[in-house]
Image (cartoon, rainbow, N blue to C red):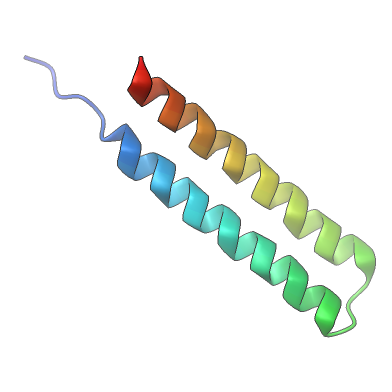
Length: 61
């Protein structure tokens, strides 16, 4: 019998990484970094959120 991937754990993992990048973006803004540095981190965070959503959705199927 094939083992299934623990997709819920992957979804949580990706969501935590996304939260970390979002906080790094906020930190960059608060410390006076250029706006594009924060925007880049938020784009990366959005990518990880999409990965988390896809993993969570795969578990529901």
